[in-house]
Length: 191
Image 1 (cartoon, one colour):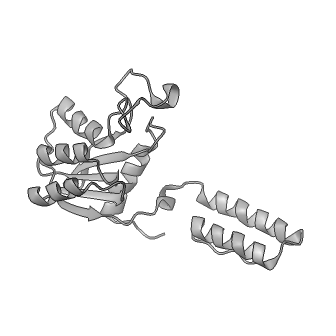
Image 2 (cartoon, rainbow, N blue to C red; image 1 turned 90 degrees about the vertical axis):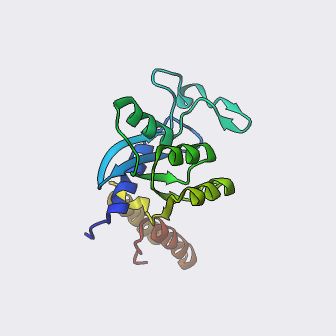
Image 3 (tube, one colour; image 1 turned 45 degrees about the vertical axis):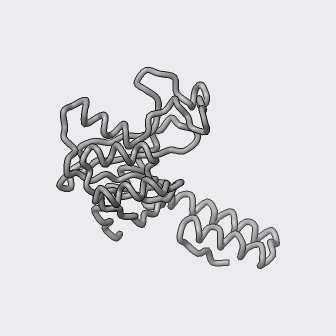
């Protein structure tokens, strides 16, 4: 097994945090790091004790769910709640931050923003990050690295494709499914 980089490690943390999200529109996770140590994490969801989108549905106003607090804000607020400074720290976010989170990240003193996936990257957010001198780095992150059942899933797909072949599936059909499995799991199946 190949050892992942520090950036991939912290990005994996953010993706794991996103699994706690209660937002039904987009699950996002954020991890704040200083000196290669996690100091806070957050995911998008409702206020503590409040109604959650997964239970009550999204409360959308002007195209935005106002019920949720974004992952980046939750991580920053966690630091505020416990008196931990984020000045000079890095933040790892599963998706590019919205404009409001970008402004909060800058104002809090974060010096580097790492993100995995472009998501409605706001031009003004990008401009503000440049003005503030916040380094922005896109991390190549493959979510399959944290899929703990990928071997079992790939094995099941391989078994099903084998059954399809036994039942007379065409070479074209088998090649199609083989390509899909390769895309999902990075494995090719002998057909």
